Image (cartoon, rainbow, N blue to C red; front, top):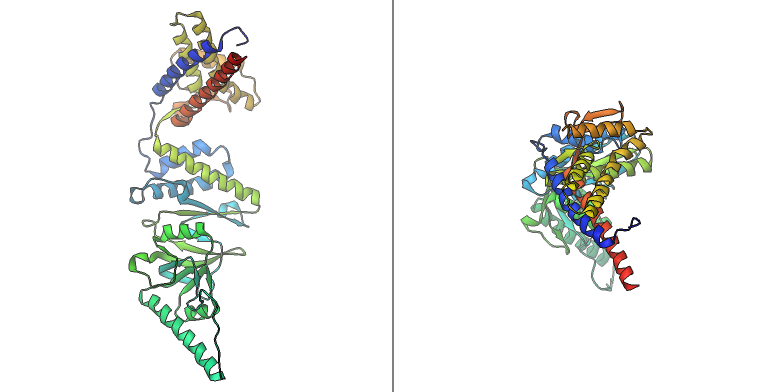
Length: 410
């Protein structure tokens, strides 16, 4: 616009350039992973995508994340969701002690003396686990001490009868918002684990892992409402006691990564790294297309756009098209600037190689020369590059159209 071009001409040419640019990008995406169900291929592509950000953590974390992602996506052919991978942060210990388990974890101890239950049948309530708590206040009048003792024994007998109904159904783990002390004593006798969970998010995760139905009132459950878990146990990680719901690999639709570190900042870094890696995996399985990386794709798009501009009749469109193509040359220049090198010779060498038909030639910052991204295994994800170009062009066109409206009002 500073050169005298009208915003309408720029918008019209940019819209045409966007269509041509995305077509060129689509022709460059001829590379796919042959098998996304093998652990080796998934680890290699995730290491390339995010491994450079946290090199010390990546070698230890990415194999665990890749394994969890593959198991979740192969579970009954369900769609992969990032919510199926949870990060539990426990302060203390080196980051190499980070582990992955099939199931979910509660950051608390059990309420009673039962700490380990194998082949657990789980019953979940959102209410207080107390059969004798009335909805309204009641007054009881005792005439002598014998009536007090008989009343207490009747209460305990009633609680035993109710809990005995659960035992007959095979229940050995009960989750509720709170427990009475007398109830906990009876649960210890029946060897039933009691877990106090008040968070609705924790309840939802446990119900998903154990395939149980959450009940809002105390009643005898049906068979379909009781969940199952291979092992429920209380473990100690340093000074922190946790309750682990461990499922078999074939039956687990959720994985938990126990992050260990000496500071909260490293724990937050591990959490962000896990979620970012899982989102990249989700994008890969949605669209398994790759394009050459290391700046090779941008240089090739710029070259082809300039060749297309020569076919245009209008000199205005020709000039705007060339300026649009020059924008893509900024990407390899920024790569060189970030490495604190001067790369005018390297950029010109890259242009000559692309003119000679070497479309996958990119920048090698370690040796300060060009490198074949196809042979070296440097790739960019097609969908990320596609939406980055499309959204940046749309935002530029939106700004230009707003300026045009302001001018017309004046």
